[in-house]
Length: 94
Image 1 (cartoon, rainbow, N blue to C red):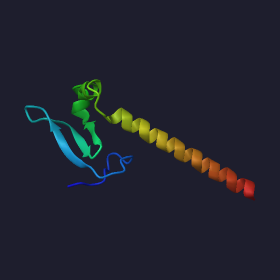
Image 2 (cartoon, rainbow, N blue to C red):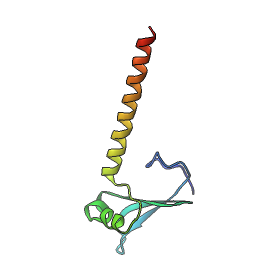
Image 3 (cartoon, rainbow, N blue to C red):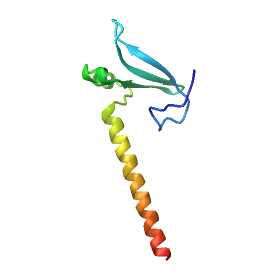
């Protein structure tokens, strides 16, 4: 069933999530399928086994732990910057 992604808050449209398994049935990640394509999310094992690198080399859109950490840091930095700007505006208005 289509749903809004909790894993990727930048995703504006609904997605369908499916697990990605090896031939032996070990899950190595998941994929979000949307109208405009898909994005792969390797899990910890998938990253340890190098699936994230293989998928990127093949030209697929991938978001792994390092990408999520970088996105969250950028979001936090932007929020801090906006909060500081708002504080400066309030101080100047007094």
